Amino acid sequence: MILTDKQILAEIDKGTILVEPFNRDCLGTNSYDVHLGRYLATYKDEVLDARKHNEIDISEIPEEGYVLRPGTLYLGVTLEYTETHAHVPFLEGKSSVGRLGIDIHATAGKGDVGFCNTWTLEISVSHPVRVYYAMPIGQLIYFEVKGGIENYYNTKEDAKYNNRTMKPVESMMWKNEW
Image 1: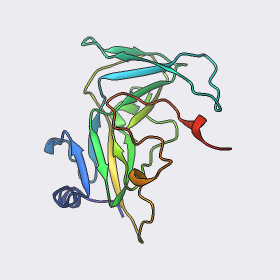
Image 2: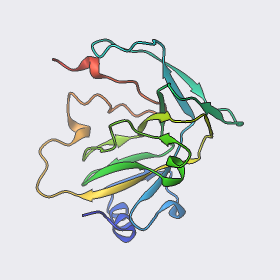
Image 3: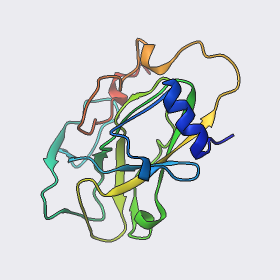
Image 4: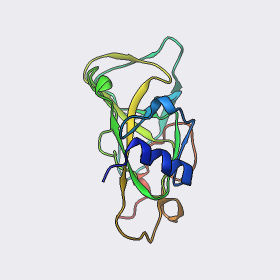
């Protein structure tokens, strides 16, 4: 079941959901709007290797905006830091953003119970488009969890994305043992 606006507010009051900064105007009927953070990143190498650490170049979005181009994967970040201690958060794009040809996540729209961080966005575009710091970029939807949890994300020893950051984080696939 998806949480409604009243349920999201109740969970914020209980401390099971945290959004910083929180703006009541960003609360929808059953979601919370998140915004594009200050930084974008691109990979340094043209060919990425899943077994190696692929380094990124990080850029700050200037006041006049930043033009995203097709054929490039951009890593963005949400302005909001979030914590979810009792629900499964899903990050979805906003329809207004999709209608500009912006896709905000290639595969990773679902978070884990216990995820505490900003969200790295896997941004691609179908048409050149200028984006701006703090523009609405997506929405968080919270799902109820059935059953107990043995291993919260923020307590997992092998969790690769636990370090709090305001910048996009590159793939840590190379840390997996396979």
